[in-house]
Image 1 (cartoon, each protein chain N blue to C red):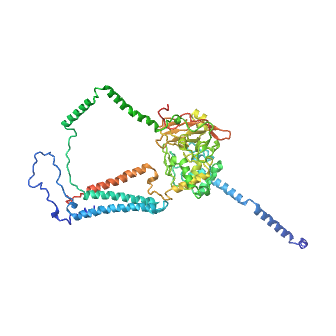
Image 2: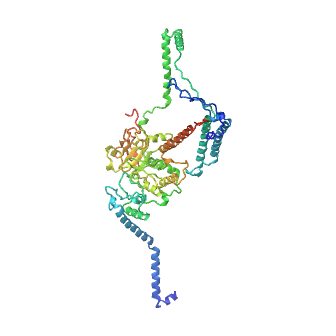
Image 3: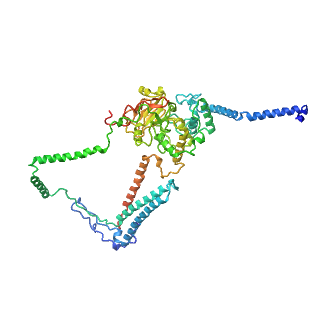
Length: 355
Length: 268
């Protein structure tokens, strides 16, 4: 754009083509005041009439593209040069990673210069002649239409499609059946869920393992007002199904004063006020554990569904459709907490056949 | 020995024996007396005494004269000195007004006074005590393990980068940026306000130390921010807003600037 501002001074007027003499003399009254005025007369750009200016624009565009090339080389060079843990101080950003900063800067410069060069090229050197293009109806000519219909009729007659109905009907049948093979192949998209959605890894007698320490939890470990996460005994991160199994079996444990528990079944399924609830929201399955220890509310960070852990995990706010499933727990012979069975209802979001 | 026994009737003998006996008694007393402990005990009971006085003036209105609590303030029996050090040290207590949540503010009491109140509250019943510097100092901790524990136990409310977040009915999880390690440790230990506690029985001290070290590492007010501007670290909301307003805004501005200038030689 450097060649545009103040470009009149060094231009000789004789290079300009004649202006169209439109408004000379008295006001010309058009025949129809609302007729299409057409395009205004074409005005040349400086680069169209001055070869030196055109050369300058060419050099500017080439310079921008060259800067882009250099920036790309700089990108590759900084990737090689800067160690990943080098920290530098850059004024408005503070202490940042030298590698990240150099990569972002050089890549940004490379892309910007390509764009700026293309824009400058298009505006100063590519043709800017306005060209009207007439619109035509899409419809085919009547003769063409008649010809096509006649050809079709003749083809139908020659193939005897209308006369030999057996061929016609079996052909329709064959064409209708072929897509069924594709439909059958859809079955290979994956195994059916069967009853996977209804069961988790919890079984009667499995101990509750603290997610932090990987040790069995004991009732005396869990204080009123605390929050603990547990997984079933025998789980290990190396298992191929660890993540998908934990996504259903994740458990949160809180302890309430037994007199604060309003729901009779929740009290029955607790151990000395220790209650175990699924950590998976019944709305769309986000992990929920935003536990407020004074109100005993658990909040889901995704859509703000709120469950009351002192009242059977009842939904008190938000889009969740089911109460939070509770796991019945007890204490085994070693004094460790254990599950007394699986969840009695599916954990996580509702599904069509849930009932 | 003869020399000694020969002089036993000397007029000064009684005096010498007396001196020897006094020196021996004094020396033995100095050597065996539990002098340190006696001193500590008296300073401890002095602190409790002083703390009780401060408590009666500043805290008893809500928490009752003997810490048993009222309808506006919970019982403080058994909360331990760590809870006092956290609540008063971060300025949350004494509270300015009741509300959904008592916010952090400028603290009012000096550390000596806080220690005295803490000593008094600790004397009411057993509870978690103020951690030692060795327990919460980030030195020698496993930062990676701390990050894992933080994401399991804390990130649901405090956000993966510790910037805090909203809870229900005006309650919120505060940001953990710029909070001294001691208070983070005490918060985990005691579970202030609506935050659940993470007692040593389910989260051992070593793990708390790791979490404190992790938070110290990602705290951009003291550590470098590797990725440049954080935009609040709140995730897609602030980043999207920045992208839409400044990114798209800059593009529109450039497009307007380019199109507003004619390329024609005759500028009319």
